[in-house]
Length: 195
Ligand SMILES: *[C@@H]1O[C@H](CO)[C@@H](O)[C@H](O)[C@H]1NC(C)=O
Ligand SMILES: *[C@@H]1O[C@H](CO)[C@@H](O)[C@H](O)[C@H]1NC(C)=O
Image (cartoon, rainbow, N blue to C red; front, side, top):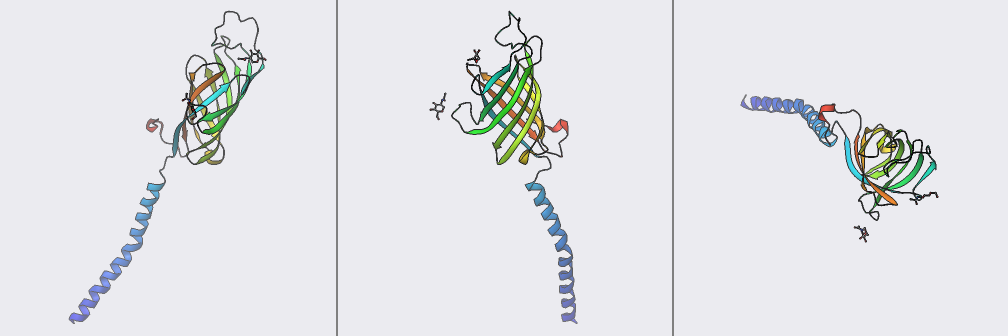
């Protein structure tokens, strides 16, 4: 009788353990999954763009004439400019190249202070390779925020924005500091977005 009872207990414990095991297994693998892949993926980094007039960028079409009195910050209305600039990890041109910016801008402000920009940025950063496309307005006197309208390869479906401002206006090369804020779907609620 005693032996039989002991036997029964062992069986009950074994059944209990077997019943719990798959459930526990599921639970821990889900937790694991969540740790490794956060729900909202984003990437934040900075690259420096080196724009050299008549070497990496050219005025293809001259803007409207007769704009006397314009300052050096203004570009004649209608000017079409095309560029292919290197993007480097640091402000120093000799630092590691992380990408290329190909694009065009057209001066669209009658005062010559603003332009429309369309560009494709080819990137190799933080184990990600591919391109993003940006479209937006350039403000000659302030920083410019360009919405990211999409991407390719590792940047497929990204949205976000690129903030750009000149840090070195020494002619003939102008250096821009570009800050990238990229987000993959599903997108986080706006209130939780942090730089
Ligand atoms: C670039 O080239 C154009 C046409 O040759 C010239 O008029 C302009 O002065 C050059 N700009 C600079 C900054 O060298
Ligand atoms: C840029 O980098 C090069 C090579 O690493 C170095 O010789 C040069 O001094 C650097 N320039 C500046 C302004 O730091």
